[in-house]
Length: 104
Image (cartoon, rainbow, N blue to C red; front, side, top):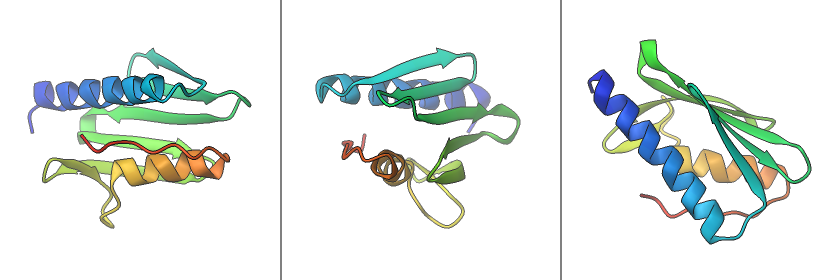
């Protein structure tokens, strides 16, 4: 993947997250600041997703854990094979939110 494709993939992913949260009428604030995308729940807890451009990776961090993901077979995955969407849903569940995402 080249750098332009990398940024396009992540921008599409972030747009998808925002759209799905809005469609489900979830009270989650989404804020983009440079290479960092922060999801803040109503109770103040946060999930942080950020670009790691030098490694062409995507990192996801919350109290449920921290993960490094790479793009493989049209999905963001950890080295252990966990998918981004599964990890994001787990992060929300850790905060007591049962939010599901359609895999794009």
